[in-house]
Amino acid sequence: MKHIDWQEMLSQGRRRTRIQRVVAIICLAAALGYVFWYFFYASTPEYALNKLQRAFKERDLATIEQYCDMENLTGRAYDDLTRDMFAHDTNLTNETKVMFETFYMKIKPQVVAETNTLILDYIPSGQWSVPDGDNILKGRQLGIDYEYLVERSQLRNTEFIKIDSVRKIKSNETIVKIAVKDVYTGTLFTLHVLMVKRDDNWKVSEIRNYRDYLDFLSPIQEAGLKNYIHATADVVEKYNLIFNSQQNRFKKLDKSPDGILTANMRSSMIAYIRSDIIPALEKRQQELEAIPVNDGAQYLAAQRRESTRLTVEAWKHYAEALDADSPNEFAMSKAFQKAAMDIDYRIDDLVKNTAITSIKTSTVP
Image (cartoon, rainbow, N blue to C red; front, side):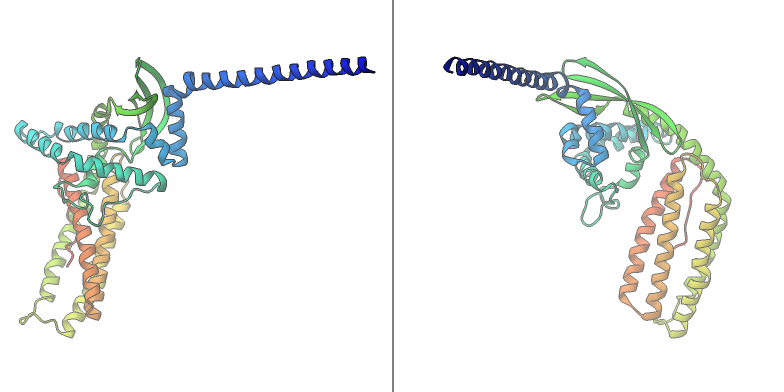
C-alpha cells in the first residue's frame, strides 16, 4: 500500500513539475514578447504614428498631446506661413516685406499659444471655434485678421490620405512622408513630417516642406479665385450701384431738422428696409449662388454668403429697433453690423490680393 502511495506521489510530482515548466515557459514568452514589443515596436515612430491616427479618429486629446510637440510644430508652421504671405506680393518692396515679417515675429508667441488652444479645443469637439470674448485673436486686435491667417495656413482644407513611407535619418530623427489632399482643388501633395525621439517617445515635431506646400497650392487656388471673381464681377458691380443708391435714399429718410424721428419717418424707414434693402441683399446673394464656384474660391464664396446673412440680420434688427424703439434691438443691429464689416474687410483683402477688383456690400445703419 505504501509502495503504491509513493508511486502516486512521484507521478503527481512529475505532473506538477511539467505544469510549472509550462507556466514558466509561458511567463518567459510573455516577458520576452513584452520586451520585444516595448523595445522593438512601442518605441518606434510607426507605433507613435499608429497611436496618433487612432487618437485623431477617437478625438483622444491626451494621446495627441503625448505624440505631438504642439509648440514646435505650430511655431515652425507659423514662421513658414508668415514669410510665405509676402513672398509673392510684387506690390511690396523688400523693405516693406521685412517690416511685415518683423511685426509677425513680435506677435508670434501670442498667436502660437492661442492657436494651440484653438486646435486642442477642436480635437474633442470637431468644431473650429472663433476667438471671442477677451481673446487677443478676436477681430483685428493684434493688427492682423486671424481668421484669414488660419485660412491661408490650409489647415482646414487639408485632408489626410495615407502614410507613404517612414525613414529614419538619425537615431532620434525620422522623416514620415504623408500624402494629403487640398479639398478645395483636389490637389495631392506629400508632406515630409519630422518626428523626433525624446525620452523614449517619438513626437511629431515639424513639417519640413510646409512652405513648399503653401507655394505649390497658392497659384492653383488663386487661379480658381481669379476666375470666380471675374465671373461674379458683373453681379457685384450691379449691386454696388444699387446699394449706393439705397444708401443715399435711406440717408434722406433718416434726415430730421431737429434730430428726432417722427412716427411717419420711422414707418417710412421701416417700410424701405423691408421692401427694398433686405430684398436687394437677398437677390444679390441668389444671383451669386447661381454662379459656379471655381476651385480655390470656396472661401470667398462662403465669406460673401456670411456677409449677406449678417447684413440682413443687422437691417432686420434695425427695423425692429425703429418699430419698438428698443435699445436692445439697436444694440443687436450694431453687433451684426460690426461682424459684417469685419467680413467685408476680409473680402476686400481677398480680392485685393488677387489684384482684380474691390467688393462692397450694402452699408448697414
